[in-house]
Image (cartoon, rainbow over the protein chains, first blue to last red):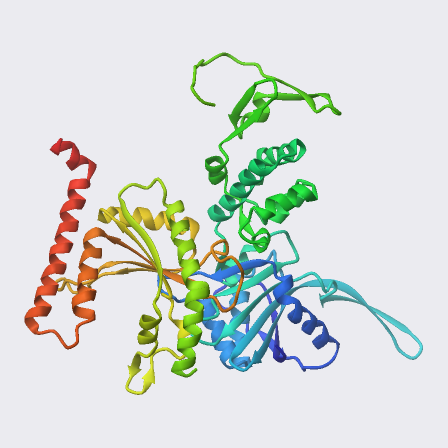
Length: 334
Length: 206
């Protein structure tokens, strides 16, 4: 979708301030180096923005202030409709995030609109300029795009009508996950996959993959990974990210991903929920060929059983455990 | 889009997308609510072609269609319902559902005038979760509507829909009074059962 308007605003931190300073903005010409750089980000935005987000209902009805401003902007892109968006960003920007340069890029194809927001943080630099016979060197405080890959962005596509423009994608190239002030506050959005839901998808896939895996090494990797999952509590990550973080081998990763409804789901970001992990991956059981069944809660397994490799080539292991006997039972089935 | 094109497009969407997604959604809802007591029924359906076209043709004023883009704006193309025993179960189910699904609407349909009785229930519009849609296809609807109602709210709404909504002409004053009376009875029954289901009352009865 071709770009038809680009607006830019210098956005200072303004969180908690009652009287925000008037924002300075301008419309960017649709040619030149800056345009080409922004066009590149805009064209790749759907691919690069890796976190699926959606506007949240703010009062139980289908209304959301940030979405309302975006609909106003896409319906009639102008300084008048872009400035309130920049002002909103300013009102949520803390001193820690410092000064930023916001770009609002709009494209349209018939009734369909695409809008992308990018915020580049201010940096410092040195400007060296040569005139006829001398060199002037200046310290500059407002340098943007010193690193053109260091920014936050969000992209939405849809029709400028009430039933559309609810979902979009976002990214934060300044940190892992996404800054709260960018997604939750400025965009008044949540991740499309809830933390409980994402965690269930992960645990289901792990359980299914473990049941399907014939190779003991793959089973071992999957169980080890399950035991490490609680350390990810509260972290925003995708299933592919979890597999990468634990260095899971390709064959094992492919098996886990094949247990998802669609491989796209492996790239959906969610916050790992500890309670759901405990609920859906409560126990680990290891069965040995000598008839032994070793079981413990996922949280306690590594503490309860010490594993030693006796013979790597033969896959011979020794588990030891020490404790007081609490109960002994005779059961029909294991 | 002409009405012929709309019918053709929706019919295709109905068969290819809505029916299978509704089936998957129903299974998903049943799984997420597994273990909760006092649930009578969980169901999901794709809106029929006739009902969709009827809704799409609604007008907000003479000559002005209510929906400029019905394929996007009509959000109950997939509708689901959870029917619970008691009024307090509605909030329990609401809280559970919001763990799994993200709402863009979370509304209680209540009658504002204390002297009137009619339809009541909890309505949501949720994003269809990525795992329920097998593929990310733009032509799929993004949302589904879900109602959480009590047995009595459901019973009244179904009969009212059949007798009143589908009625050929306008109902008489007396017929409307009878419908309102039935709604009042359903409301009263919900209040009584809620009181009886209260653990303290149960204890006294036992």
